[in-house]
Image 1 (tube, rainbow, N blue to C red):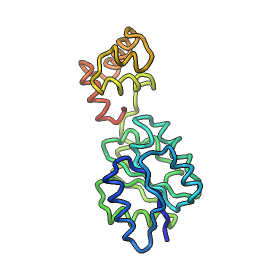
Image 2 (cartoon, helix red, strand yellow):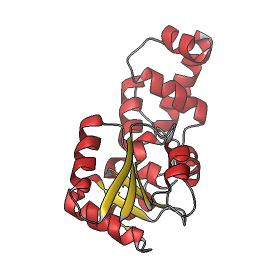
Image 3 (cartoon, rainbow, N blue to C red):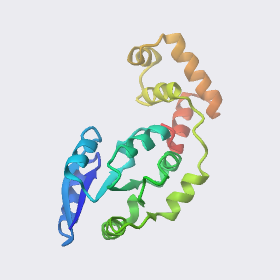
Length: 202
């Protein structure tokens, strides 16, 4: 039996995936989680053969943080990343020897099950389209603090609310937003947010 740990934030999709994999004669889902908070400790205790993790739950646009989060899983677990081509810039941070597979979310359940079998068998399976997207994607030009400011701004709150949430002055927030717009090249805050989201930077 191939023991699988699922980490995916969308409950409906996660439960559907767990239910499908449970119908496979050679697959056992040992746990399905919405967040990575307990995933590493559960993986260490349950010792799954494959950890299937949605890149969206590891970090939001932080390439380094994504890679570091994935490296925390036990070394004897094959890590299979589920990703959307839209986050190709973030994928740059996970491509490495610690990742056994990279699977596009539009690949289909049967194909995913087969991919799980292959990585459990020691193969490395990388979706070519995702790999090319990751290698060709522009590097994130925003600093960690700029990403923090832009993520909060993306929720539609005014500068004063951004400042309160991040413990900054309103003037500092405005300076950050101005520098972000100049760095990304948008005409205003909304364009900067849209460009950054499309590039997978936030």
